[in-house]
Length: 313
Image 1 (cartoon, rainbow, N blue to C red):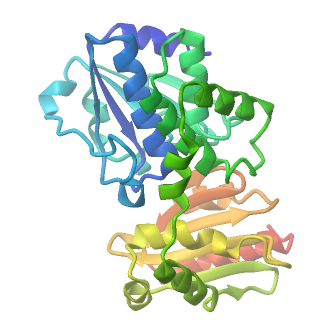
Image 2: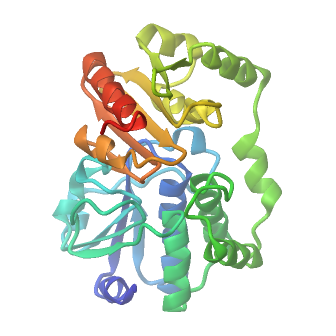
């Protein structure tokens, strides 16, 4: 499965790892994990990471990105991780590289790189990286294992979502055998302050439901400021406050940001991905995202989601 990617790694002494912007645990976990795996397997190679800030995942070791000049791409392999669309990639300079490759677990929309490894049956991109290391017989140091475990546990919804299967647990067990300390992962990952609890309660008060059972919250600039979170953190961290509500089959969190309205879409059954793609985003059948230009467009998306929930789409 990974033969072409392994050969691409062998052709280059410099490897630059990219992922999607506003990273979640899987984006950073796959990036950091692959970096430490490659450094262990090829200590003579230079392996660098690029992208925007880690946000709420800044507690992860090695989450500070490298400063990479343009000229370093000239003979490099650029690897794009956990990204389904070029518009979502943090740092577009992957196009400057001598060769490019992608590893991703989202639904395939179209090619991005010269070497493509895309498998949407995996619960996470981190799970794919584990399988890559196993196939290539590359060592997985503890630093890599902990980063990869974070990506697996967060993107699988604590091993709850559909793509979680026996292979998921075999890969998780393999990572634990490399020395993963669950306390070091779970304590910073899920620790909440009293303010966090109150913020979640305030968010719950804003939930509305459409006629066909689409739960949604729209936070304008003033509301975002009142929550005391960045738009990116509010968008992702709060969307699943609407999960498991009786009578709600789809839920979406709309969050105004300087670059447009962030849209986090979720479902407990219906395929919402085509609607995310329609509005310039992507992701999975039951978990996708997009960024739209204004509230009017966000409400048009909500109407499409309501029609889907009502069996009209």
